[in-house]
Length: 492
Image (tube, rainbow, N blue to C red; front, side, top):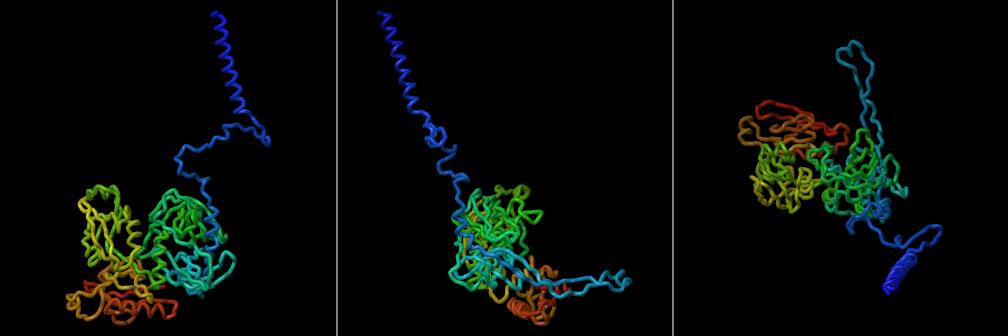
């Protein structure tokens, strides 16, 4: 009896095992499909070990952005005149004492090229200032080979942005995106004409934001570049940096390279700055630049230790300019500016970018840390000359790199003068190049008496508009110590 029960159990086990094997065979039965063996495991959805909402490089489609932008990026060709000097053989004894003698050649024509971005259907084009600077002729070639002569609407060396115009309608154009929304690691495309290879598209990621590379040589430069590893080469300058939606989020401007060709990193002016420059130039003919009136520096370990600062974020105020917007608002030397109108600023470049978005007369809030305690100040921004007036498009005094103020009555009495204007400060610009220092009192420019800044503008405009190749301001004046000084300010 027991023996029969044992065999029944064994038989049941064998039956269960047989059914299991048969079932598994049916479910995972190999099948032949065009020579490829598959199984039910292949039908199970697979995913990478990441969050469901993440995307890899393989998920990004660049074709839409390329199609939306490639026809709106143009080739900008320029011709400019350069003065040449050449040596000639003279008296060898004379040259022994005084060096080789030179005479001026006829102006030589130099050709250059870059890129530009059409931003409106009626022919407004953004490019870099350095692409068209000092040009005599500007030719724009569209992607479909149509060619136009372009005129310069306005240019701003402080941001290296220029606005051109061609006479045409119904042109393809790129819409502006918001560069503030860019994230480090986000995919971007660079579109331009490197090495005269028209309509070239390269891809990369945003490597950093608010990068200052100290490349611009201007009195009030704003460097807060988008850094990317998309390949950019000579000829890309002025071209588009776009996101994967095909929106313009920057103008490609520079590369970090020891050879002059792409070596890993490129830099673009953010669209937030570009839009401000374009808007001002179209409306006023010249950029309306607002300033706080402070000298600032980034906070490093040495400064933090020396000044007992508990943060590395923000811009340290090294000096507050007299009668400036910052002074009037209550900013003091030693303050740390951490926020502008609700936007946190961690570096000098970020602060410059934020302030650069506003015009003189705009009212903003500025957060500061004073003695490591937060305060919020209300600021009415001014222009570089210390007022809120609209700057005329006729002439931009900023090229001089100087600010001015009325002469002190005591100085006028001491030196017996009843006219003139004092140079309040000097930064990068024509005055600094000529050697003029702050405190210098200008009496005459080109033999015309100067009473105020308006007189400086008038003389500057007359020189810039006279059509002569050599544009010079002959400045007469003296310093507070009584020393007379004469300067030739080269405007070329």
